[in-house]
Amino acid sequence: MPTTIRTAQKKFRVLEEELAAQRKELRSRIDRHRMEVVIEREPDDEAAAAVENVSRDMTTAALERERRTLDEIESALTRMKKGEYGTCANCGAEIHQARLEALPWARLCLRCAEGSRGSGVLRIAS
Image 1 (spheres, one colour):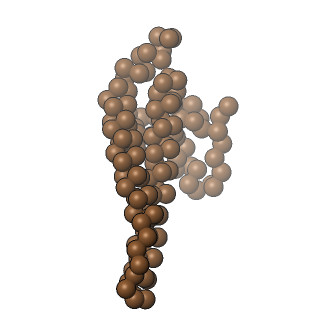
Image 2 (image 1 turned 135 degrees about the vertical axis):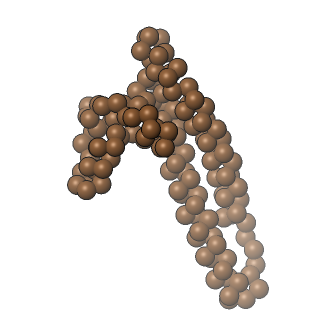
Image 3 (image 1 turned 90 degrees about the horizontal axis):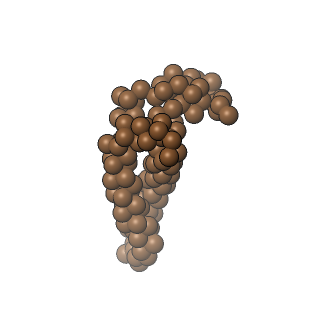
């Protein structure tokens, strides 16, 4: 294993542990949400059916949001293993520690993240 990858892994060890814990919690919540969506109940009346539908829609939206976050966490953990974590996927600059602590799965530095919001176009460096 190259020295730079080992150094990066040591540097981000705390964030890696935090991401692993978040991944475990999200997997648990996703499993619970899936069970809530699958459970079929016979509503007593139309109002109960409407409430059940709204509840199911909200649970489905939460499930999708958590699934996307889990994908981002998995990607961040993969980048850590490859020694690519903490480097902007767009410009190649180092992502500041404060940004990584606030959003541990961040792929972009703050400048590129702000720039991609305004233009609607994101250039990924090869």
